[in-house]
Length: 275
Image (cartoon, rainbow, N blue to C red; front, side):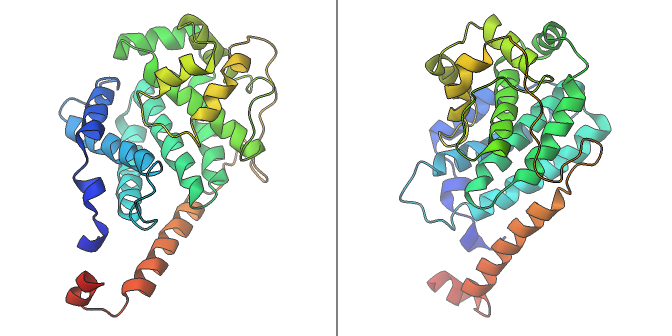
């Protein structure tokens, strides 16, 4: 990445972002991937995610400023994906999927991510569908001591389901039957039934009003343990054959390359700095 793309906002984050990232590192399950030795890498991931989320609340930051951060966080998530598939525990897999859902969900302000959302929902379903909610929570508490990160992940999945049904829709019925029991169980266990209650919990992790607040507004419906709705899927998405994930990332990368080449193509380093 050229130095001009490495804005101080993301590579020298403010104290608030650093503090939030450190607190979130302590919520992660410790295993071979999110180990104590790798805590600086986990912190870097969370700083990037918090920074990207916080940038969406700022009107004094140009639209090009987040691109270097987007590229770096995307690359780190891809690296972690390889490690989790090879060495990760079930809890580490869930935590990574939560981060991917949050990050790529927030990228919808740049381009649609329905293929990725459908793929991540399939992966999470395959990870948690075979477990009773009480068993899942017991394992998670043994690994982390808190249900906050797990709830944030499941709420990200719920928002992804909503996004596949409409960019601005809110829940008027329950979640798919593999997700609703876990969400409803944790909301009941933590006694979170109102939007403000859930919002206070989710805001400990990377959070944006445009993405995460849809989960908060849906809390009264999701806390109801009734009959779950079918699994809404993006067009052309099949359970046994997830949509090709690289397509959307490649488009995002090409968009960045196009911006970089058209704005800076052919310039010398000194000319780039002047520009």
